[in-house]
Image (cartoon, rainbow over all chains, first blue to last red; front, side):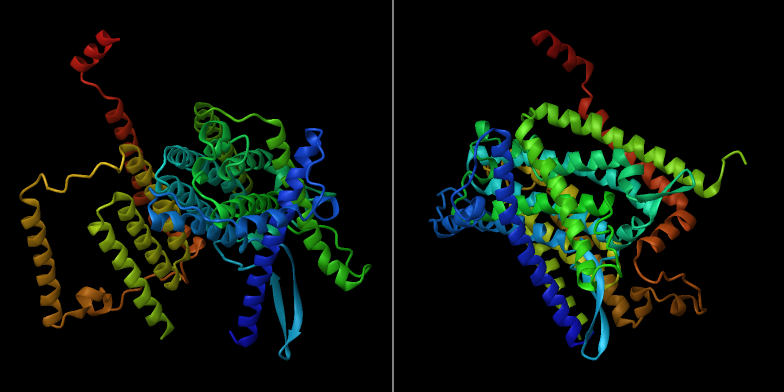
Length: 362
Length: 188
């Protein structure tokens, strides 16, 4: 650990921070455009080319707005809630690898530069722990607002988060068992080979967990949509019943922080799904054929391309599915997703044990 | 040196959180105090290289248990001022007695110079070197290995215990004495 290592860490953190902010700007625009197209509208079209700067304009507006603090709030927690929402959102992405590591000569020696905030050996568990922290923001915002609608939103959020966190965790275990690691960089590395199916190597098809663990992917994605409180699981902020849910009493920049956290979480959850099931940054790079710079950047391109596909599914769900009723939400979580995830987990465990130890009767 | 500074800061957070949990009038703030304690402990585990334990601490306690606590607090309503007089008159003297006994024990050990009883230094205790399998660090591999190979029976027994507890909770929640049940049926 010398000066260069320290500088590299700082640079990585700053790069990820800026990247997440820009992604959020584009993501909000992307969502509004896609939803508008699906509803046969034009959507934002004035600010910037194709309305791309609309989010920036909205952000500036929120930034300069008066921050109204209602009289009945519990001030300390009321202020803490938006901050608590944003911090885990940024921290989760720190563990996701978004490009191929490369070496640079710095300070006289070659150094490997990870395109990842921190390559934790408990990466996946860190993600789960941070996403379980994120729910506090909603709960505290709902409670500290001192008003009925936010409180209802907060209570709903707690129940929903607890229910779907279990499904999320269970859906990830098959990936861990199959790849044998919880370190995200190793999970990506594992998926870079060609697909092995029934002992045969299938050429041209990557070894994505998506193919062999498709049920896990489906469960993971549904639970991720619920975890990020997105439609059709957005009962937490059901506009028709709860005004704005937990953030009804927030305005200006404090509201903007909740908004930011929601979109970062959406992006991060897609990024994690890509990392766990769709090979992360792996993809053809044509090393040696293309210039080194281009083949070095291509993995990052593949990563973002895959993430955009999943983000499109997010937006697609929002544009097409009506919101679930509360009892439907709970029933779906506890009676369908969790038993399904458990059964799939058992199947995978048996298959893997069979492959490792041979037939049980031998 | 860094470790010492971190330890002092974290133990301040941990003890401060614990105190605010006990002394806080408002249950939600008390829950937040406990959350601070749990987080401080998790970071202390990280310093001790027990990453897995730290993360499990956050997932299980901060993520699940405390969220449930908050859920319950919200449902029973925190607007009502909780009555602060204790129903158990003997509780306070009993606690004071236990605390005094523990302090006396620790003080006695320190005064008599038997540090090894506190630090659990096995060499000093038994007089011979015992091989304690020390995992390289708190990685999942080492913990899983020792759970499945060495501590399989306690591990499974704990699982059974937890299942019994949750089944018991469900039974208690749905249990109605027959007398009350019939009254309820009549009312409908």
